[in-house]
Amino acid sequence: MLNRNAILALIPHQGASCLLDGCSSWTEHVLDAVTQRHLDPACPLRHDGRLGAVTVAEFAMQAAALHGALTDGKGSAPGYLAALRSMDLRCDRLDDPGLGALRIRVTQDCAMADGFIYGFTVSSEAGITLATGSGTVMLQPMTETV
Image (cartoon, rainbow, N blue to C red; front, top):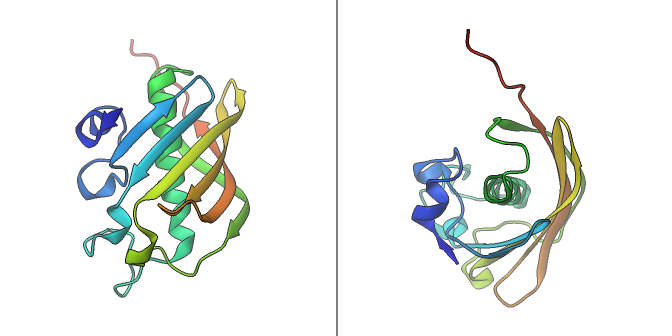
């Protein structure tokens, strides 16, 4: 189990921009994370006091970044989200206290020389699926210093 401080030491998202509270398990291809940051009124993804369902992609892709850091699949090259696909949003918003903690599962579906494709499922604390989809993460080339 990783707590928030351990996560902050591993991913580039810092302070309020880090949306993960913990990681319960990971393997070479799968990571399970948990968060309650969606319920924080100061969440930086809120717009007009609301946290729309589409923001679930950022929660999931931060879990993918954590998976990459833990499995060290491509070294320390920074990455960026290049595409989201097959998003299936099953709720209107994430800031509903009735959802409880969010359970985030990311699965590394494909590893390439220049990036990864991660599938994701985000569920409520009660196990209700809130969103599924996939994201493509492209790695920035490492630059050599002379």
